[in-house]
Image (cartoon, rainbow, N blue to C red; front, side, top):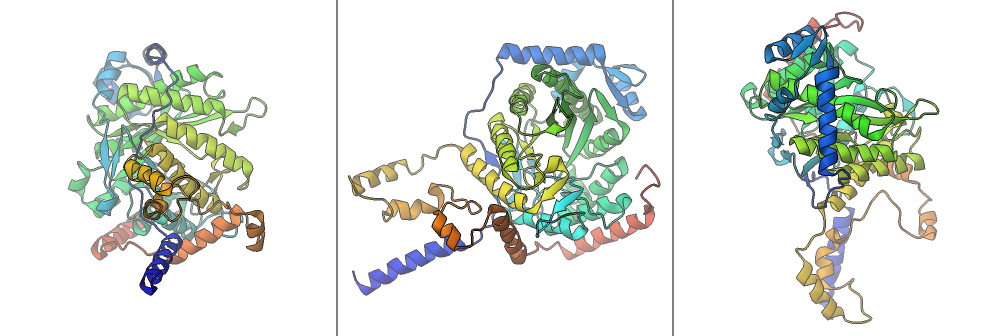
Amino acid sequence: MSVDAVGTVRRGRGARRAIRQTTDVTMLPALRRGLPLTEPMSEDQIARIDAASMDILENVGVVFRDPVALQDWKDAGADVRGERVHLDRALVRSLIATIPETFTYYARDPAKNLPFGRDYAIFVPMTGAPYLRDLEDKRRNPTLEDLANFHKLSHMLPAMHSSAHHIVEPYDHPISQRHLRITYSSMKHSDKTFMGMTTSPKNAEDVLDMCAILFGEAFLEDHPVVTGNCNGNSPLVWDETMLGALRAFSRRNQPVLCSPFVLGGANTPASVAPTVVQLNAEALSALAYTQVIRAGAPAIYGHYLSTVSMKSGAPMAGTPEISLMNFMIGQMARHYGIPWRTSTTLGGAKTFDAQAGYESAMTLNAVLMSGANYMWHAAGWNEAGMHCSTAKFIVDAEVCAMGYRMAEGVRWDDFDAALQAVGDVGPGGHYLGHPHTLENFQRAFFMPEMFDNNSIEQWQAEGSVAVTERALARARSLLGDYEEPKLDPGIDEALRDYIDRREREIPPADALNQEY
């Protein structure tokens, strides 16, 4: 072999090694599923669930604890008796028919816009944790700096399509003003799409005002840029706070997740199919209400789904029934032509241990096969949502990337070239040096960075580092390499001015002014 040839080989190996060692933070496109979905119900069973849900809406009714919503329903022709609204199935069907089946999420960086609905899906990190396990794996109260770190990690992890909102609760800022700082952190530290706080109607309006500063008020009119979430109180209740926030998002044409909060066996029947019936009725009542507010506004069929231990009453994650219900809810959402949300990588473990891994993997696989579009709580969730684990955040994101690759389905674009390699190599040979392998090694088989697949001798020689320690080291490295996607200076100043004004207007005492 000539000196030039040797140099070329060495440079090629060096280049491939450099590629393997370089951190790639490029966001994955929206997942477009290429695998068949798991659909356990027949058409007759879908019709049975639908009919039973409509019977609940018509004959049992749903409580809307909000005078504005009650008047809206009266004006829409519903049968309102006190706070209980009875919805004719024809009315429900006509309303939900105007919900878009697909739309595009628009991000601050247009390269990170995301098609959404039907076969397209996105991963969104967990939110709402009152504690975190930090970079030293210590459980403690979070701060605004901790929240910023999670937004930075969300920005850098390829499988995360959003920076969410309050991944952890920043306790170093008053509750009444916290939503402003949370929203600014989402906008400042990432240029991906994000979520908006719905902790009160006024808080939701503040979020949307900040979105108007970031994108322009006219842009919001026909461009979804932020996602709200409204939780129902199962069984069959929607309250004033959530309904007011729902109205704020729907009026400004921004998508809202209509999410019954299900604790199977506690606030639903202790049976899978009837639980789905109740959940379906609850979700449809809120979805229909979004269209009363603004016909054609994007809305997402949502739920938070867990089952309750009949021994202790504690919520459980990763159970077979949760998977079955996800499969069924996916079928119902597609039956109505509405995009839908679920939760993934959930776990009840107190540390990042085997239980956390098994529960999360069970849920993620079911969610991928159920056809969910908005896969929330996709990184960090542990201890039934009581803490966000930094280590688990990193590993969850990589496992989501693995799930993404699986759900894409089989690639056929290199089929002929790869078969040619079989003839080139022949019996008894190997493919490691073949041109097809050298061209495709990076994408041929997923190579996890957080999982150690070396021999035990090599693992011991490298310090016997366990997955939690590897993940925390990875988090520190990512944060060290983080580069802020700078806001336009004029927009940044306008956002800060808005926050300053609103913080002067909002009483900092957490007990004051319930409207905030």
